[in-house]
Image 1 (cartoon, one colour):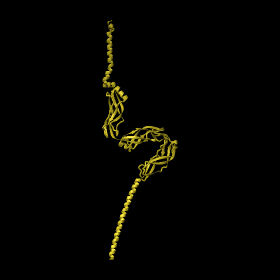
Image 2 (cartoon, rainbow, N blue to C red):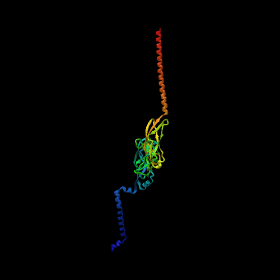
Image 3 (cartoon, one colour):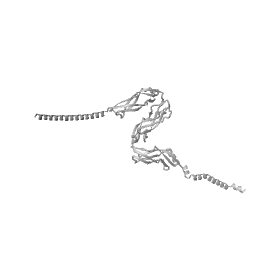
Image 4 (cartoon, rainbow, N blue to C red):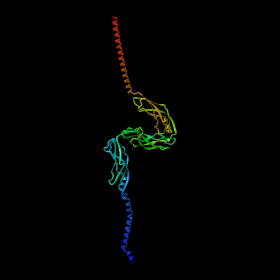
Length: 371
């Protein structure tokens, strides 16, 4: 009876409540204490900090308008560590920049340490790569025509490619003066999938090559060109004559151009072939001073012409006459002729004097004899 009275007291219930409270406290915190001992600082970092990697464009500061900088990557990676809320905001806004400071750097090779600006002081940032090797050279800019390169044999059997069209026929090439000088051709390489039966349309990056086919470190304006290669079924053919047209000649010379190939065969659509009666072939005579034979690639500017047989022809170019050289040659010839005539006159005079002397001597002998 006394024990039951004790259990029914308020004091008993308070003791029980306190025991349960202590039990729950130690039970809940036991996992956190164990986790904290095993992970150490990682717990704090995972709870309060955040780490992300952002790809940012690399900007250039301190470069002159007359300088071209080679070796800089377009983008770099930045690892940012800091309070979760701030790092998340930076990732969303990206209101900072990464740059290479070239202030005071002259022509030649340099190793530049990359920097950033605009980040909160509450975060740390690591740029990858931290340094870059650059070469500063004198800048040059020149305009070049663009040539499309593709493998026409990849189209389906019985199909052919037509005349290529581009949204930009020429591009501006900027780079180191020596590199721009060595540009032989600017090409746009177009990939045609095997078995293609439909038109191919691509936005293609450009490439500048030197005489050996080596790619040069230059930039283009625009950076890409949009190329359209028509693909159609080549079901018709037509024989046409050639019309050779001279171009790039010297105004002081006259040229004759000829070829043994008089007729070629065009392959394409009936509609395209109906528009062609002769094939005009431009022939460059630049640099020709005598007689040379050149191989000319045959092309048609009319869409729907798939191919031409033969694809190339041999053209003989003969140059004659140069007013300036002719006048010089005539003048030199006249001088030589006059010199020869003068020499001949002197010889004749010498011979005449000799004859006179001989005659005079003979007269004297005759007079003595008479005496």
